[in-house]
Image: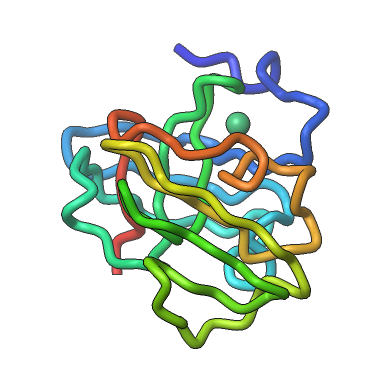
Length: 151
Ligand SMILES: [Zn+2]
């Protein structure tokens, strides 16, 4: 049994409280402001469990297990393994192709996503550096994927 209170950290709270488990689904509650305004503190969602990155599209929410905090995080999927991610003054390029998505302020950043890994960001870009998305911790191995929001 996870002791969630004990695992709270000094990071901006961006974890998910787990209400119950079964084989296919899990009920989760949003904690923290990193996904504001699309996911708000206290809201609950049903998560459909999956371990495969193949079920996800770019920009879709993804729930994964954080090995740093020993709990689940909800972030948004930005890039897949071996993709070249570049943000030039806020403009997004994946494998040198411009993607019309303007949520990154005036940031300049680039990374090649590792093998069998994915890259996430937080909807609330103001929390960049204070939450546990890939801008802080880098690419995440596909083996930490827990599931997706049931729609
Ligand atoms: Zn974390």
